[in-house]
Every structure is written in structure tokens, then in C-alpha cells.
Length: 275
Image (cartoon, rainbow, N blue to C red):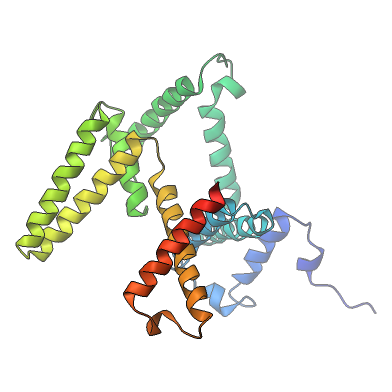
């Protein structure tokens, strides 16, 4: 007599198999104890982390890694869908249908009768009109009402500023933004002089917020710019470690002056590479 195979191994590959896998992992009787214990709240941090790992693979142009990271992110969506299904909120199919319906509604120039003879800027304005109508239907009438609180602070600052700018609350000249930046630096220095920790934190937050505004007016993605700066810092610091290691030392065994000299060497090398 042939032993029956586990259905998970014979299930149609792709999404059907992945959905069945998650259902099995969450099965109260036969599933994985860890997966069974998870909630929307405990899984949410993993969802955010996986989204960043997708962005990291894209930045590195590592498409082999991207395939895996997209799978990890997809698993997060399936996870939330399964938990919602168990609680009777909605199913994974409902999620897929909702986003499909939304995309169809927001692209009448592709899926409807509206003309495609528009610029990308025209279509962006139309998109915002549709989104504004959707917000009104959900009771989010305020311009900033539905800018998610859970977004990373840098991204939320950018979204808040863009949303306010759409209704005319914005500087028209970048020189005014730079002037505001200098004003915030002065206010931070004043708070520091007064040794007021709460004021220092508040003014530093204001300074970061204005820096995002500078980036927006210069058409720079502040998150991408900061990631680039992080990468540059890591590369230069690793150069310091490598050079010190040649003499059997580590940064802890070196002086700040020596490390500064190695840092300058790393800067020169990186400039030569870009030539």
C-alpha cells in the first residue's frame, strides 16, 4: 500500500501552495506553535523589516537576493491575510480584489474610456483627486488625516509636507527654505546654550523636518540620500579598520588623529574610483 503524501507537497505550486502552507502553519491542532501564537501586532515589525530588505536588494542591484526578499515580503502579506481570515475580517482573496479594484478605478486612462493623452504630471493630479475623494468617503476629511502614524519619521515628514504643499501650504522659493534651515540651526544652538534638554530635542526635530523640506525642494529623496551617506560612512570606516589591521591593531588601539588621517585617505580613494 502506497503511503499517502502530505497535501502540501502535491498542492498546486505558486500562490495556492503558499496560502495552503500558511493555513497549515497556523492550524491550531497541527501547526507550528510559534506561528500560532503570532498576532497582527507581533508580525508588523517583521513586515516593515522585510520591506526594507527588499529596498536594500534593489539598491545593491542584487536580483538574486531580490527574488528571495520579495518572497519574504509576500509571506508577510499572506500571514496577515490568514490571521484576518481566521478572525472573520477578510480573506487573502479580498485583499487581492481590493487592490485590483483600486488600480482599475485609479487608471481610467488604461482600463476605462478616459484618454491616455496626458502627461505623467496630469495623471498624478488626477490620482490625487481620486485619493482625496476616497479619503472623504472614509471620513478622513483633513488634508493630513490619513498620513500613517506608523511610517518611519523621515518618510512621514516627507509625506506630510507633500500633502500640505498640494493645497498651497509651501514655500515657493528654496532660498526661503534655506533661510528657515539657518533659523532652526540658530534655535538649536540657543536651546543648547540654555542646557534645556526638552528644547534641544524639539529644536533638533524641527531641524530634521526642515532638512526634509530642503530635500523635497531640491527633488532629492531624503531616505535615499541618507542611505547613501550611511553606505559611504561604512565603506570609509571599514577602510580604517583594514589599514589598522595590517599592523595588527584595531580602532580601539588607535588615536582619533590617526583614524582621521585614514578617513581622509579613504575619501581620496573614493574620489579616485569615481573618476
